[in-house]
Amino acid sequence: MALTQAERESQALAGADDAHWKSVSGTTDIDDSAQTETSAFVLLTIAPQTGSPLEDSILDIDLAKATTGLAAVETSVTLTFYVAHKVDGTNWRRRAAAEAAISGTAAAARAIRIPVGFVPVDAQARIEVIASGDVTADMEFPYALHYKARQAPTVTEVAA
Image (tube, rainbow, N blue to C red; front, top):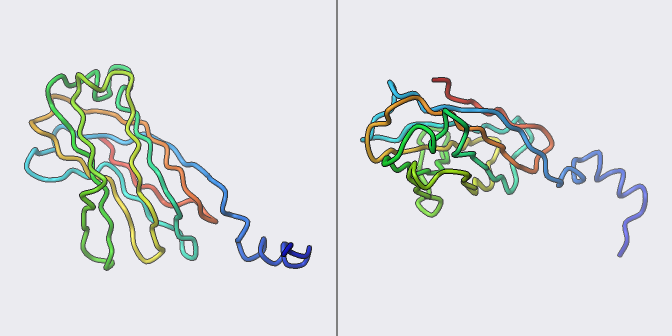
């Protein structure tokens, strides 16, 4: 059954019309002096605004930024990307199904798409990276977070 004009306006005011895709972008880094190959390194953190959970969020990361990206800096180090969620508000838990590994030599002209998924307002998500060896220099990663929500999330980047 079709909605009346009043029902459509009511849904728009309630945020039901906000189901279209939006994006936020920036650049985040791996700091060579802070990175270790024994633990996960946080690449960025995503926090929804109050009353505005993220639906169907997807993160695109450029791996081949000229002179400072993975493809330019590394040849043999492999980065494994993870999505972690702060499910209980305290502890970060990685989702193994969202892993993707790529070496520097394979990263030329490449990007990686990571499904972040649903992020409720009382939780957060972050992208973590583990390197197979010591990275030889700082690396920069342009990113675009695509999401459905009423308000843009707070994305905390890492600065090298």
